[in-house]
Image 1 (cartoon, rainbow, N blue to C red):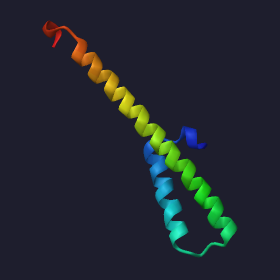
Image 2 (cartoon, rainbow, N blue to C red; image 1 turned 120 degrees about the horizontal axis):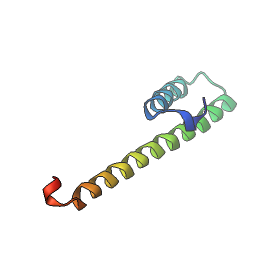
Image 3 (cartoon, rainbow, N blue to C red; image 1 turned 30 degrees about the vertical axis):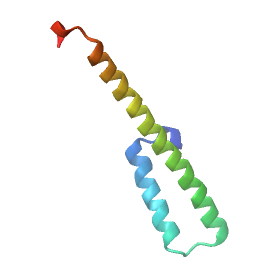
Image 4 (cartoon, helix red, strand yellow; image 1 turned 90 degrees about the horizontal axis):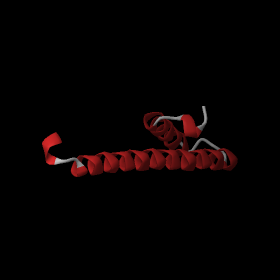
Amino acid sequence: MSDEQLSFEQALRQLEQTLQRLEKDELDLEQSMELYEQGVQLVQRCQQALQQAELKIRHLTTDLDSEPAENQ
């Protein structure tokens, strides 16, 4: 599954696992760099998911604020 297909929760879980592996200090430099790169991609996916959620909330809030008072 690509990073784009991961849910926020899945990406966050994978990021936590990646960090745990990096913290164990049992990897060589190449493996560490590869994991670090994966971690950066997962962080970007999480940020993207949070931004999308924020935009959706703003949109919904704007819709509620613009409804006529009799529909509320």
